[in-house]
Amino acid sequence: MSTITAPTPTATSTHVERLRALVAEDPVAAQTDAWAWFAEAGQRARRDRGAALAELAELFETGAPSRGIDGATTGMLVTFTVTNGVDRALAALTQAWMPWAGKRFDAAHDRGDNLLAPSARIPARLPWPRYAMTPSPEGLVAFDFETWVEPGKTDPDTDVLVIDYASVAANPAVVIKSIRDELVEIVPGAHLGKMLWRHRDGRHSLLAYFALRSRL
Image (cartoon, rainbow, N blue to C red; front, side, top):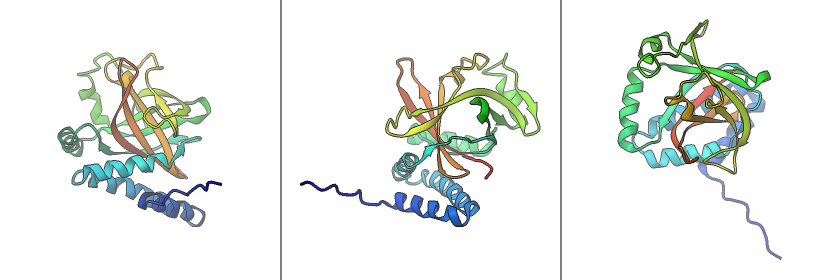
């Protein structure tokens, strides 16, 4: 009779278990610690890219689809994942100016949009001259999306919340409709996301990791 050997815990899985145990005692502390972990991994990717990206990939796989996420969230670009040189150049650019502020979700209708800084309005006219952004109390609103749950394109064994732009007719065809975001919840209120590029042949490539912080 064969025996099933349990997988050996890794540093990442042990850290996730600790955070999830903390949720029952102090959910705000668990959310804060997870958010700090995302940020630290992004910083570490600049000096130890391979290890940091491997950790983020493993962390993403521990998540569950971000079902029920609702309202405005705070966004963080964790790290790009293209090539070492491209990642460094884009990181320097976004450190100087990051117009993306987060996302808003309408859970009841499986949709949402992106929150941008007011300074994004004029630069956005260059790639999207006919696309109009909408003012809101949180800043500019743009790039609506629809959501649903299904297996991830690069992680087929992990169910994710899909954030899809191609299904919204008003979105610009240039760049935006080729993006597919995927989101998982690590602990309540702390979500890790992948930004994927959809190729014409149906393949998807990972461009970046991002994170969202939602209200508890």
